[in-house]
Length: 173
Image 1: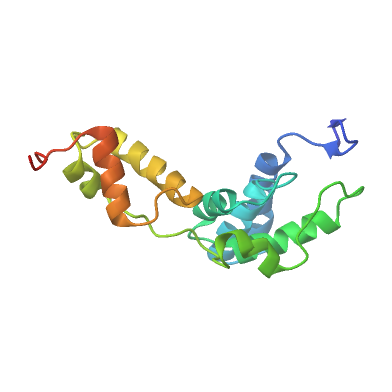
Image 2 (image 1 turned 45 degrees about the vertical axis):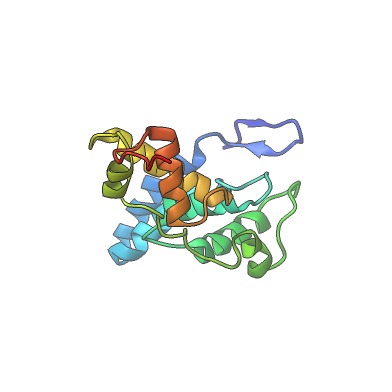
């Protein structure tokens, strides 16, 4: 059911992705589809609007890849996006013509990059004690990595020391 139209005349059914996830799971389970497939389809249904109506960037693709993992990847997302786009009328958004074009911002990668640091490394490089703040720092590092602001583990260690202090005394001159 279309609840409203946006400023471009595109029908908007707010919340349909979240509402559709349990429906998709229930339907697939009733059909005795393997749990692995149910998990993948559920994530694709839940996140299928994540990159709609905005430019596709490396940061957006890698963020989405983390949400989809480990059940599916950006190739699967591309397939559902093409189906969703082709079923939409009128077509107001520009859509990449090929999977290669879609994945160009991430150099063809279909999954998010591996984390540059683990939690224990954040703790060893900073004044931070074990706890939830370590996870928050890891998320900030992942976002900076996705944007290309931090590229290597050494850069990540320097970033942590610069933002959160260092347990190790700096060498004096």
